[in-house]
Amino acid sequence: MNRAVSGFSKKSKTEKIAWLAANYLQENPHFIQILKNYWNEDTELQQLHDDFIENTLSNYYLPFGIAPNFLINGEIYAIPMVTEESSVVAAASNAAKFWMDRGGFHAQVISTVKNGQIHFNFFGSEKDIEEFFNDVKPKLRQSIQSLEKNMQGRGGGLLDLSFVDKSHILEGYFYIHATFETLDAMGANFINSCLEKMAQTFEEEARNYEAFQKVNELPEVVMSILSNYVPECVVRAEASCPVEDLTTKHHNGKQFAQKFIRAIEIAKTETRRAVTHNKGIMNGVDAVVLATGNDFRAVEAGVHAYAARNSYYGSLTHAKIEDGIFTFWIELPLAIGTVGGLTSLHPLTKLAFEILQKPDAKQLMQIIAVAGLAQNFAALRSLVTTGIQKGHMKMHLMNILNQFEASKEEKEQALEYFKVNQVSHNAVVAFLAKLRG
Ligand code: MEV
Image (cartoon, rainbow, N blue to C red; front, side, top):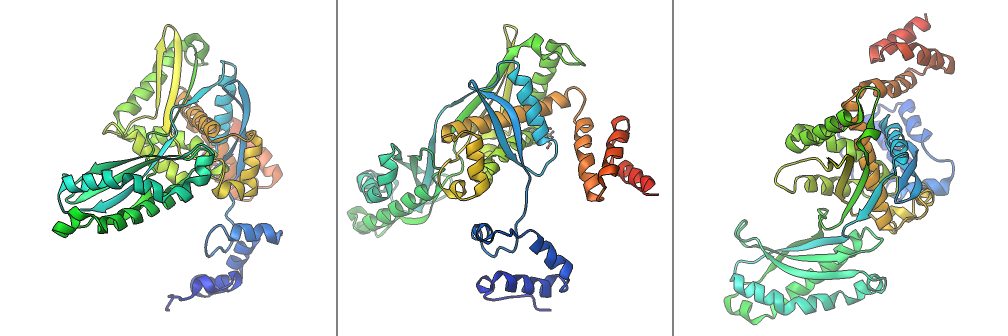
């Protein structure tokens, strides 16, 4: 069977589904129905979603939940979270409540500088190319004046351009490093447009530059693109309380704090643990990034590179005890926006901003950092005390029951039974089988 297709993007949605069904789904009407079940009755709303990407066939739901009781810099927030993983929202809510009773979270944006590069080849004299860059720098700036106008009007724009020689690592490789302030926008489009325009100017100016003509060597732009590594766009969030306020059922406050700090030290020492430790943090970070229509892949890539900035991959969170006070904090790079992109298009994203009381980008950075810190607190608190499976399997129970289409009565009986019995996939299956005779 030849499954190659041409002109697929030109087909209507119904035609695309028909093609898919014929080629990959054995024309099974059940599969076609699944796709259609997720269409929205409101055709305008559906069209909006269809237009987000290309070749849309249906919608893919993820739960949109809320974690209330986040006291951040004196304000109480209910944080919208989008995630498929059970326990994440519960963990965030529990950690929020815990810290609300202990003064809440404090967050602060350290810096908001974003960056991009014009990567180019040059095989002539290093001195000539650096001189050329210095000569042409004002013209590069000038060439983006019209692109920058609006952003500058709001107080942002291109901050600086610098020349970077990497030819000692990769022969003939240089780049222009550009830094930007993009205020409440994530700024990807703005940065990329500026970079591409400056790259064009750079090549044009090079063609008339005397030193290059003499030796017949011109710089050649390879690509111009923003960087998702943003170590100069960083937010810090922290929570602290007297050690004795950390007493749990299993430990006194000091024992708990010491074990907690030890868990972080392990995540600073051992990559295998650090990755899972940071993954837990990203459970919180990504859920808010997604709920607010931001680019979670950009955030993920940038955060993990930051975690490895000291030549080893380590924990994004830190903790200490000083003068009887336990302090727990996170520092992470976040290039996010509260205007532009999906933020003003997706109705649920717009709603998320209403729930968050219309934060600007700096406030959203703080909220996201706190969500990550809270998630890490909840994970470590479970890990160093009861372990995570006890709580996790309770949440998981519902997923298994739903998977087997348990009725309301069956769910009630299962919840009762598994209050005292250990949850496992097999145990739930056996329980349902028995119940159903
Ligand atoms: C699970 O999604 C996240 C945890 O594994 C994080 C951690 O181990 O710190 C619980």
